[in-house]
Length: 495
Image (cartoon, rainbow, N blue to C red; front, side):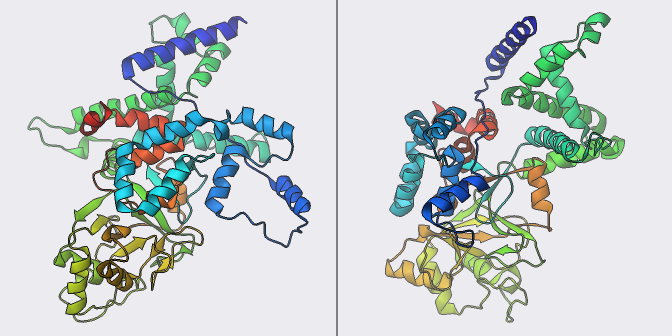
């Protein structure tokens, strides 16, 4: 009992102090149960199906979302147990109200003006029984990947590494993989920072020694389950190291000289610069593991299109040529010799004029990524019967290509220019790299409705990145709540 009382006192004092000084918005993540093979077998037996017949689940995204929210209970007892485990998320009107409030009336109004159809879809998803956005275990075609802040990458990468070691130990024996140590020392510094936050150094050797006892370790273990605690610790480690590097690398003349930095410090600086350059990117996976509508230059390569990096609203003639021909062909006469055959045809002058008529005023083009910006662009839409369009993955409702038909439809008034999104460049990952980045906490894979991927991301009061992470819940929502408080440009919208 004494240990239990000590834990509660320390935990509540810590949370109160963190919330008071850091302004964090705390919430607690849940692990949601999912269905298993035995459940599916029972359902098939009830329907008279055998193992060779496919289970009809309709839209697979909605099915999985419902499964994540409430599982597939087969008895009243199981249903009651599931409701307790998930906090009655599926039946909570408050949860639905939170989703609508989080996205915001202004964001919904902009979506309605772009596409009443997508607005209706998204509103239905937000007010449905299950959460339309949720974290997935790995990246998938038609899903999203969110670039996470460096403190998140440091902590989650280290935590997942240790979890894998624990699983390996359970499967292969007590010594399996235990000799291996996580390569990122910043994670262990962040863990030490959590302990220092709980038990500030007093200079007393006896008290310092007590920090390794079982009671202290149990308090630390409980504290690091709260996002605000570990994120603050990892963030402090990042800031401290940046300050140390600034002192060492800046000479008397104010010039930066990285020759004085150690290899670990240079590695950290490169990670920090990369994290900053990819700040709050939210990408759509259009090719991964040999699946997807966008062809890859290498087998099993992954391709991601950043959804929230607008380049231009209103497409000029020069930009139109870049989209349709690629940078190397604006003044060239030969067709591009490449496997990426979308939008590569050399269109004549009449088509450029038609394209300008369709998209010059309301067309929007985005920077899909830093890679292959010389290639012709990529067009996304949600138009199922678009001539020449190819679905990114079956059931996604997101299509690539079909620019000629798109131009004809916009001119004829059958579609709006806002129904189509154009991208210059993309992010390419060598085979296995995107999976590794997701495991290491650099990216967070997510599943979301197609309306999130297809709506124009220009001037949204609630940034698309934070809209999605806030809907996903759990740790990523906590991180979004922390990071959005730093956005000075959004202060008027929060008031």
